Image (tube, one colour):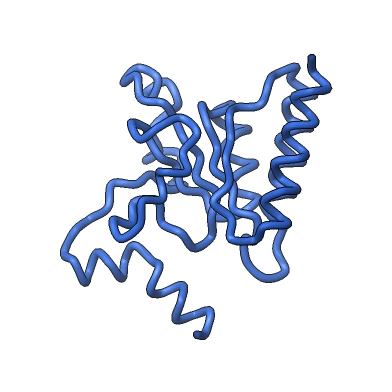
Length: 157
C-alpha cells in the first residue's frame, strides 16, 4: 500500500468524515490557541506526549492508549516529529509520560533522536525523564529507545 494512502487512512480527518465524529485530541497549535501546561495540571489530568507520525491515539479502531505508561485518564498531546517534540518540551517542560514511535517518516529524525534530545534536556536541567513506553512497530528502534532511557536512569542512581 502506498504511504500516502496509508497516511490518509490513519488520519483523524478521514475517520472524522467517515464516522461523523470529531476526535478530542490536542495537537500543536499556535500559542494563542494552545492550552498552557498549568491548565492541564489544574484539571489534574496527567499529560501524555504521543510521538507518532501516523498512529492517531484517539483512533477508536485501536486501543493505542494501552501503550500509555500513565494509564487512560490522560490529556494526550499528539506530536508527529522531532521539532514538535523538542518545541513542546522547551515551551511546557516535561510531561508525565511519553509514548515513542521510532520511525517518524522518511529522511527525518527518529524517535531515537527524540529520546537522545530528551536525555540531554534532562541532563542540562538536572531532571529525571518522565515514564515512557513505545508503540513502535520497529523492534530494533524500540529496543534502542528503551535501552538509551534505561541506561540514562541507571546513570542517575
